[in-house]
Length: 180
Image 1 (tube, rainbow, N blue to C red):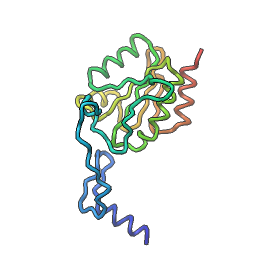
Image 2 (image 1 turned 90 degrees about the horizontal axis):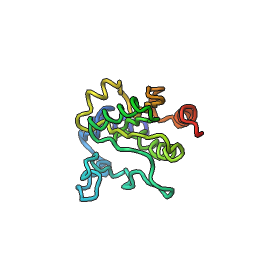
Image 3 (image 1 turned 180 degrees about the vertical axis):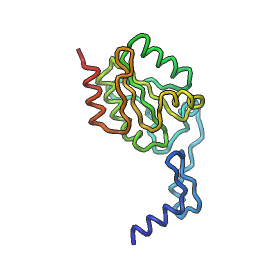
């Protein structure tokens, strides 16, 4: 009976894995579709970031122990410059490809912030794949899923982790970016 009810609800929503938001065909549960709040002077959308999400905390990247070492990439030029810096200057860097609508991305975000505190000598570049002008760059980097993490070490892409696997991410951080 419960499985029939779930199947019925799923049929009423056209949900695509690549879609940002579910499109209601007929919604018996209107509370599932929350309107987005309007932009204010201090909201993320006013700053050129993705629209606010009612399930996303307004504290973007901060904690009681201080600000994290996460840089928000907001354009194709910024992404190109960050990649060039990681390759040419041989600085340790992580490129964290994410999306506002991605559940696993929201789940792994606090862990990534924690790792950015632990490995403060490594810059983490957070890239929202839905930003304008990133399509061709994302294609050339072969970003097909989110979350995707590209780890740069000694000017080269050392490895890539696709998915929100905390254990694999932590092992990769530790093996590439040991504290000396």
